[in-house]
Length: 247
Ligand code: NAI
Image (tube, rainbow, N blue to C red):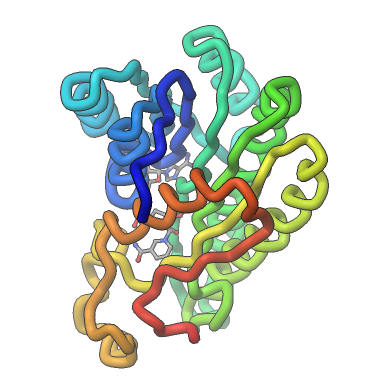
């Protein structure tokens, strides 16, 4: 890559920024100079630690907001709070996500709804309430964290795959709708990334099918976010970060 981009003076909102992929992305964007709003579900200490690291290591402003992204009105309130604290938002990373795996025959209605509400509706809620700022700023960048499960399907994950495939449709529609306002919207489809979410996947036979022969790291996904944030002519794209598993 060429020289590092500078995001100095910009504000990035990272949902699910308290750990795993979201933490790595928040720290990467901070390292490039962006101020960071970390949205998280329940671990106050973890979210505050990420903010402290952003401030101490990269000398940017950072604040944590406890929020359930699936709650339309709560998202509206938190986005207003972020606007008050940071003045505006330039970058939105929709990373918050959950799994509630089960075979179709055993999947409860609540497992389906919870996953769709967090992974898909949560991203819609965030985009819905931040897009006015992007339009007023004549530019913005949205990155939605999907999954290879959206592209390949996965037995035991019909709720998760559907939510992540929905995110790709959302990404392309938003990209088309807001392109004339210079707002870009892209998705990343990670494969197996080593985080708390995949801690029990170490013996998954699918791992042997990864052409690059290893699980990905959270830094691998942060690299892709950095690229998409800097790629001013790329919109509506789905970038796989999967060691080749879905090619
Ligand atoms: P994780 O479980 O380590 O972290 C999830 C984050 O989302 C946490 O910060 C949590 O507080 C937040 N969160 C969950 N529900 C929320 C809600 N309702 N409102 C606000 N925040 C909420 O997950 P990980 O592994 O870091 O994954 C991050 C994203 O990447 C997820 O969307 C996941 O589906 C996706 N992904 C992960 C892969 C992996 O192999 N780890 C592969 C493909 C996609």
